[in-house]
Amino acid sequence: MSNNNNNSKPRAQWASSIGFILAAAGSAVGLGNIWKFPGKAYNGGGSAFIVIYILIVALIGTSVMLAEFAVGRHGQKSPFGAFGKINNGKWAWVGALGLITAVIIVSYYVQVGGWVLKYIVAYLIDSASIYADPKGYFFNVLGVNGMPWEAAVIFPILFIVICIAILFGGVQGGIEKVNKVLIPGLFILLIVLTIRSVTLPGAMEGVKYLLIPDFSKVNGETFLTALGQAFFSLSLGMGIMSTYSSYVSKEENLIKNAGIVCCIDTCVAILAGFMIIPAVFAAGVEPGMGGSFAFVSLAGVFQSMPMGFIFGAMFYCLLLFAAITSAISLMEGPVAYLVEEHNIDRKKAIIGLSIFMFCLGIFYTLSQAFLPVKGVWFDAVNGMTTPGFGDFLEFLTDRLLIPVTAIACCVYVGWAWGPKKAAEELKYGGKEFSLENVWSILVKFVAPAAIILILVCSFATGTTLS
Ligand code: PHE
Image 1 (cartoon, rainbow, N blue to C red):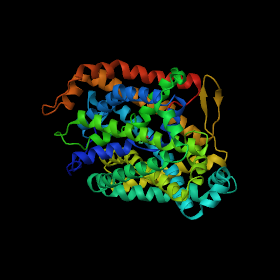
Image 2: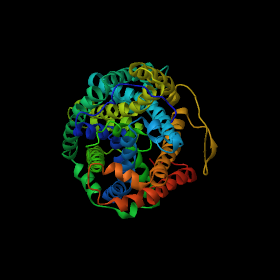
Image 3: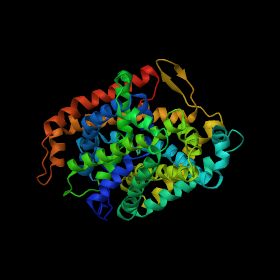
Image 4: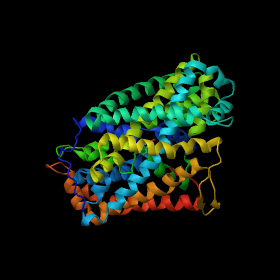
């Protein structure tokens, strides 16, 4: 690379290995775990889906995470610099693609983070209005009746300011410290809410539904959905894990840490299943996933519980914690890039990125109900279509950019850099890597093939698999 990076300061590092693990887990544990996984587990036959998901994470997810970890720590740079480290920077575009993906995702992620903040406040002070008409309330928040100032501007800005404050603190003083508080906090909320859920009258039906596998619900799409979910949930294909691992010292055992991070992420997803599905059974609400499920359908659950508004506020706090730790991870890669490759002051980079993502993201919310802003999309079933701008951003990242970046990352590690050299990085200092041969086959062949399948199928079927 020809960039003359003359930052004389030593590169930031995590203060402890638990700090790195919690930060990576904080990135992985996000809205996807809480409002997508339970619905997918429901559709995919309960534990039948859960078993498939665990196998995919263990085989493919962990392998790709390890590949990203190796690239990041070896490169000691933002994704652009890290992927540009070999072959005279010929592969820097993979990192660039990851950065673009991260910027687009974080633009709408912070908008949804704003909605979550709005709902915490709304449950605390005005749950009656939500209960009276959950759908009408949600659409009103999104702007059917006029400019959605709160959902598109005020609360997203508040959410962004929280992220800015954390990132200003740097890697150790900001990201690491906050994750050390929010991740345990998230676990406590999740456990309290799960206990509340499974002890509701009628909840056992939901527990049984999850525990007894129903393999008749499993088909090809179940596998693809599980694959897509694994990539999104583990924050792969966005250069995030490579950025976070670029702050890891050579003494750390990345192999063990990848296993732990994948385990934490999967445990949270499964627990979220046991929080959501039994509650939904108890309240007689239709199980679902995504924003409309979390903001509309779940109102029925909280309404049916004694002191439901408290549990409602707790649930949105859980979403908030998950969203903050993921959003800061999405911002850190682009910030590191601006600082390292363009010598921009860290604080200026954070503010600049925040302004950009707000300007892009606001159209995500505005296009939901207030403004008819459209994007363009193509798939084999529907042909050329003009989805709302919000959907367009999600299609662009989930169906195209994440898979393409993830494939490129596997090709980079599996073929260009080579699994031998990558494994040397992972084994640095005499760490044991007993599954090295299996891993290199997974990274070279199995993972790219699986991701190509996701890519092709989402264009062939016109559905989002993540
Ligand atoms: N992994 C997060 C989730 O499950 C989402 C995310 C994607 C976070 C990409 C960071 C980067 O919701």
